[in-house]
Length: 486
Image 1 (cartoon, rainbow, N blue to C red):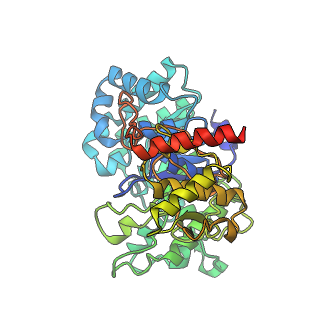
Image 2 (image 1 turned 180 degrees about the horizontal axis):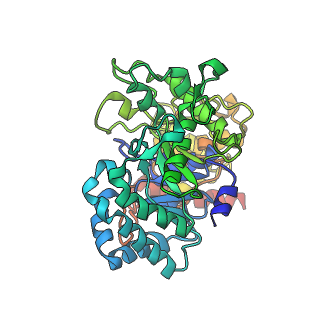
Image 3 (image 1 turned 45 degrees about the horizontal axis):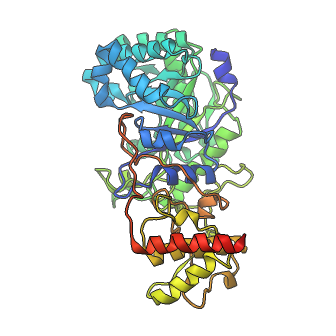
């Protein structure tokens, strides 16, 4: 099993946090993931809305048990079994769940729960065995890299011995179940806390001359970046406890694009440099000096900027995208495939012009849904784009659909002067517009619960129930034009 994990092709995944004042609907999140060719994600919970939206997407999903749920699961086998039944069995295999993160950085952020951490992992694994899912879904728990003491030189690294009563049983569990050690690595913080000892270029994966590389005096191995040194320190720390065949997956790493005045290196340029170099490093299968050619699959922190995160400005600015799905910066990934090719500058849309005469808008809408041969059925009551039920919103959908079907020429977005071309995606809720984030004109018809509806018992929220005279007219007009076109 361990060999099989090591032989897997390396990949880049992305963490998805939800501390946003306006969190995109799950279907919009999935649309962005597909457009950016992101095929591996990690959720910080087991949000039902996201798991429903991810069904049949082919995206591989790590789900998480939040730290606040650990105590109940770690003390009760039946609680763990119920959690697996509600959050895993109910969604698998339509949603391709590949791993369960039991808590996150428990030893350093919630030390009082450390005593039941391995029990929680075992109980969750037993529930997977009972459902015959233990081969498909692995169980582990992300650790902070700070539990490794004397991380340089890597050959001398060891875990904080006070945690050995937890770490030894955990490593035994990971080895016996064919799982992997999950590690969170933040070179940004290592650099910030080093008081100038760690050079910025060394933290950012920038090319270094051999004379500037860090050298492990025991092995004479050269290290050109913090990331590799920390991964190898983890391998050596495990070997110190006689575990030599447990793979490492990096569950969090990244670089903030903005910071306070005392964080001058939290910039867009540095964030771009770090993440671009990281992706190339992983996808090129470089591996580490200790294990060359064995790349460490890695999850970038994170998909969205989280404006509600407490703490310094940098805490709110680790994302690759804003809440609208627009890139914070364009990653430099030439020759690195289509993953995160996040240039959306060519994304344009046709929308109803602000202040346009409602009668002219209605006439243009009628034309688009009739002679213009736009499929306006998504605007019918009960369909994804019915709300908001007004002529501006409905006209925008019809105009944009026509615009994309006609090849996005400027003439296709005129409608007698009541339409404008914009780069702002007009998608909203589960109404995903044609061309939105690379959807290639394919409507998303998933009626998924909203984010943070973590209980699998909670019903899906139906936001398309409001009636109105305008919608009744639209139903009649669509039916009439359908008859004419027949």
